[in-house]
Image (cartoon, rainbow, N blue to C red):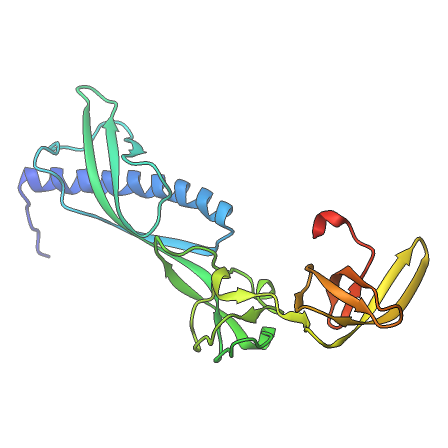
Amino acid sequence: MLFITLPAAAWADSELNAQIDQATSEHLAQRLGAQAQREHWQGMRFTQKLLALPADAPTAACAAPLTVRAATDGPVLAGRQRLDLLCPAPPGWNLTVAVQVSVFVQVVVAAQVLERGGVISADMLERREVSVSKNSRGLFSHIDEVAGLSAKRRIRSQQVLSQDMLVSPWLVRRGERVSMVARHGDTQAVTQGEALENGRKGQVIRVKNLASGSIIDALVTEPGTVTSTFNPAQK
């Protein structure tokens, strides 16, 4: 059996690095866990790499657990993070370290090419793990959040989907006939109309009543269907 004896300074550095790694890992896990809840991330995990300690770093580990706080405000995402460390045990010391953080989450991606304007179904989507960056905003964690939406532009296979890439599809198109539903209590009346504008679900558009010739505002509810009875605040 071979025994290797390291200098005392090497043992001290190794112990200090391990203590810093543990303290920063626990700090990042707490902050990232809270952020994952806010952002509704699924399957979040992270890796960290402690960068070289500054020249004025202590030569021995702290005799008590380290206190860690972020040196800068803002969310923790991929990239270099500066953390302030405090050793509360006498004689005590303060140290600022740099940690390279990588964050990974499960998000929705296109399982095939998604054509512009086409309605997206669940079988066109899948989930996979991706690295989160500072520009990763509006990502989807669940397939049912995307199914039923429409692509604003052509999306390539395996591309990560975000909110700015998608929109609700047109349920009513200008010039087509629509069913105009009016409800009064338990009574419902349906007449035929002509859409004077394109409309997505929840949008209010102008519709011409083909029987009376009058033009009204109506709320798009389903493909080819609008209602004339809605809360004006929705307009």
